[in-house]
Length: 224
Image (cartoon, rainbow, N blue to C red; front, side, top):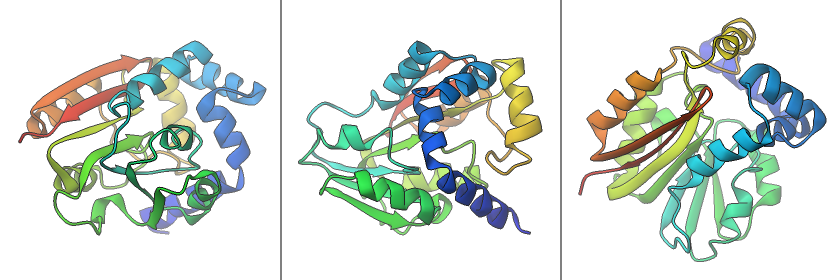
């Protein structure tokens, strides 16, 4: 089985267990809180904090073009998009199962595209803002993902989001190495805080990076 097929299978498993996934990613159910605490060393306050940091790059009353990749089930972002009726929002995901759940939550100004972040079908400079929540630790070709996101972002545009980085918490790293990676949920290699900052600063004119446990939250501005 190819790496892409393994990831597709893992995403299908997540899609089939979307209620569990939503509870975990929002730290809002009993089982989700157990996973957040055991794997990620986070309580609800920390979980909310990293998500707030990750979403902070979206301006209030944003009315431009936004690309989210991957959208997942939309549990984190559809409530935000309901407050942005004048924005043109495109949500992309590799998994049709995850995307189907997001569609049921979506307001009318959101469109959906199934695709690969490493081979985006959009023209250069198509978006004012690109958002990526909890995606890069799963992408099989991370260099292509960085390159494609930069390409479709307009000069002066914002790239923001969050994902797992190694080296911040030994217990989290153990779970990622022994469970999440073998199951195909996460795909190495993984960034560290230092390597991520260096990579982003090579691409973007302005970079803000903050870690909450093993989650890196970033906001970048592309040069004009």
